Image 1 (cartoon, rainbow, N blue to C red):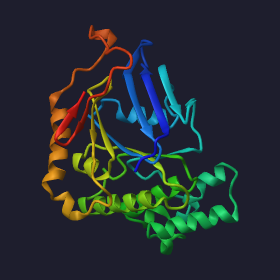
Image 2 (cartoon, rainbow, N blue to C red):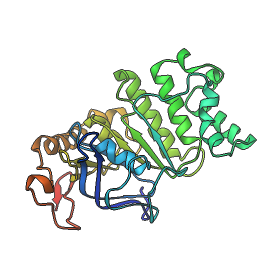
Image 3 (spheres, helix red, strand yellow):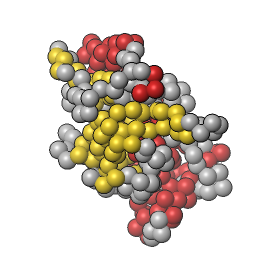
Length: 290
């Protein structure tokens, strides 16, 4: 079960990018409010281009906060840090480094390359089933194997918060399902250190229902949280549950929210943002609490 302490807190958050020409500002997230608790697995879904990845990158410290507050453990996020690791959709491995050396990259950059970190990296490769290919190079691996290395590398620094941006989106269905199970197994076990808090972005509603404690549905850009769906189902969630009426019902609620086309909030187009601290609508099966 998720902890009671707040790991990540976004309040009236404004994110965006400066236009390359004209000096304007393109708003990605506006008046975004959410909280994620310790040891919670939260999945974000939303329309393409709504600001999901921008928000994830802001949490990683790669996109600056333009307004409002974004805090990790009560401290403002003002850049990258070792307490956060980001897994991208495409395995961003260094082609000239072996599998093991890729996993060791984070500790090496942090100046923490020791016998203990090497043991941790080898243990992670064992956990993700790649101990036998530790000396191979990325081009010698399949797409699924490369993403396993990517996941092991993200965990090698023992982060507090694991960020995953559609990490299985480019894989075939069978490989994706296998890696979903593997990710849950690693996360639930608190493998190699304490159990992590995880934030996962996807377009796949079934993936969201399978993985999440809560699913946050983002509105069209500029994004705010349009709906929260609590997946109140014990873990582990087996293959039979994925075919159940309950599983489908959760998916239907999320799809309904996505198809509802919740109006975007934008100061520039005359739409008034919701008042500060406005409650997020929360949905549970059989109940809806505003």
